[in-house]
Length: 414
Image (cartoon, rainbow, N blue to C red):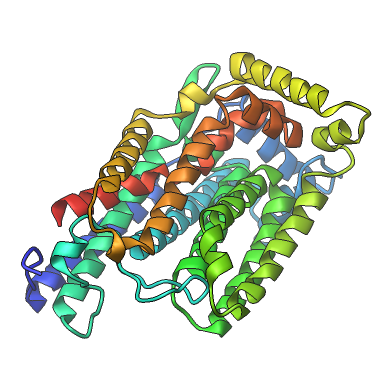
């Protein structure tokens, strides 16, 4: 415990003032930003035009996202298209910031101090830290309130840093512009569906890894189901990200799921999986899906694999904008995460970290999978058949790579 010095109330208050000052500055910055509006690009050419069609009573070709915004603007009597763009941009920018902070804080809390969910609990949970065995368990706030308060404010700062990394580390290039993710998608339905995907993922992490009541677990299940429907209606690509994440969580925790003594929490969680799979079939593997057509054809398994590989090679070689989306800071973060995990393999005493390592492994595997999908032909081809070959490069946006640098910085500091 010597590595963390209890701080007096005045110091902690100062830290909180600094934190909320940064948050206020970030909110002010968001309100002062403007959307990316170039006539040849989708925010103007398609999304605002589709909203205008619904607004003017024309049966537009847009989605429910366009229809809802059209009704909102009509209700408030807002007719200027530039005002529409500003309102949508600011709202979805703020939403993305808040949701990404919520996801980051959830993941870092789980990694650093939260006990396991009853779903996976098999003893007292310890946080995953190379120094845990030397320092002892510091997760109990009753033993030292100041230390717990300090750790809480540290997690807040680290979560804010994660959000900053996410905003600067996700983006892409098109024709003549390299932009951050938020600039490309703040005036599109993906500006809503991506944050909702991370919200669903955060709730799922809480179900699997955080100790909470049965009532709260049921509430999160309902919220995940409702949010999944919204994502699937907005843009099924992000729904696919969630399905992949759910499968990875189940795989990483499969051993523990089979060994848990109290099965009721597992049985409670099964409806989530069932609902997600039903929605997947409805919105992703419908009758017109390339994958469903492929598997209902008379092709042999070998021929199916060959076709998937052919499409994958075409995606990787000609349709891929992945290099422009996979930023340098993301490369550093994932490299550091892998290195951190390798170093952990050589630790002699892992008993205290046996629970939390599953959490870290899920985040690491998820990061690697979403990064590898656009660059491995078979994976790219499979996702291309499920969704749209032109959009496979966007899978990078489903990687939680931005969690690792803040977490490793925390462990290094400790």
